[in-house]
Length: 291
Length: 330
Image 1 (tube, one colour):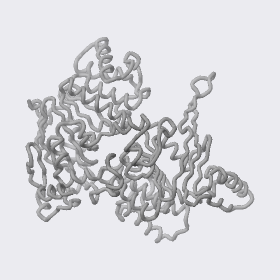
Image 2: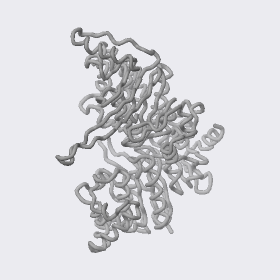
Image 3: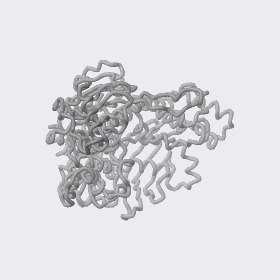
Image 4: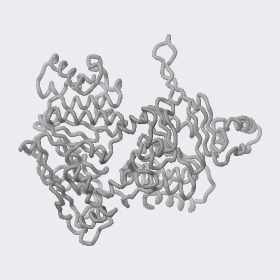
């Protein structure tokens, strides 16, 4: 992991002279994401002039890798740092310490334009279906925006792909001419998932992708996530508070609390035989049918 | 003794696409001290049922039928009369503790408000009572917290404050609309345990509204499953879950991943095809017809008959026998 750092750094230096730098060679082709000792600290506003502002250690030393076609789940309660971790992996936050490598490239060391080009390969589905869609754009434009920005496609091909992904997430062709406010919260989240799918990315980082969906629709989307993985070998980093959802989608799971992974391992094993007290508490709190 | 009798309740909303019958001919009864769960997806009419009982329907909506609280029809009450009922005889806990508390007043003042209004207690008495309530709902250091503002409390503590407010006047009925949906699972468990214990101790009746089957299973004696504004299945909770009989209830159950499933056994979830229908153009007849595996022409023209399959366990479906056979063979 660490040996790619100098290369990524060199790529950064190149770009000052050459417009398009060659991407760093992939070290291990089967590893899609390698997260190494990531820390993210936020500074809170000063309470008084005479004391240093307090730091929040949102993510406090997290290391993991996801292999191609794998799905890695992070579960935890609100405030445990799981969403910050997702944003760090997406390169949406600067890191306090550590590195995130996507296919061997340290994304936090890449020049802006290269990172932008790389972004088509890793897309994100956000948590809030109300804040993540532009209210003044029609659905067709919202969903087409990533390919418009990152790829050179013709108008009719773009439209065909928009309709294809909308169908895949359970929306209709006629929905392309509607605005986000005409949809329910659940339908909006499906638009957001369609937008992430349209670039056919290698990695999808999904932050609570189904929490806002109705149960019957949630199942459709979870099946869709499985199908996409079977079909295209998409890799997932799934962030969720819902243990059953993570269990359904992921091969490997990490339980996060106060910025660190307290337990990590193959999903079946963690759920069948939790070792850490926090994992046990979390599992015991889930209301079950028949229990 | 029957505390609440809802008979033929229909809620109609005026929408841009015409009148939408958001709740259709719903009837149920609630005994004193009984707990009832209403489960369903968004748009099934579960929240509007609660709002209709409280007389809090949005301005474009109205209710027909009767809602009798201890024999008195609440739907004929004036706004002034309803103000005597709300917060006094019926307590409410809403989903979003952030938005249903006033950010400008201390929690102590907000809890005291209902008592000062309905019970006419003076400030000092109200304060003692608020401290007792805060202690009862498990807020540490009530003497300190009574002067806190909502933003100084965590989500779970805010929901405890909401519960304290709802219970302040000793209501006969508590309506909890998705009380834990915004909370973490560990906090959810604490809050539900708290509500369940308080209900038992105080002998209140409760209507618990949730989309979460597990929450319903663990917390109420009876359950109503709603779809498209209509009741599709109802009965004693454990009987209903042991013998799910309506195709929709079955589909809902199968659609939820369970943490005791193994990945090999459930590579795919069974889904209900299609989406929840628009309330403005609900089909005549069974509301579930467009998503149902058992649908025949007979389902389309008229509302399905209600079939009693066991004591108190009712299912509104023409093809309940086929659905039950299939379910048993699964």
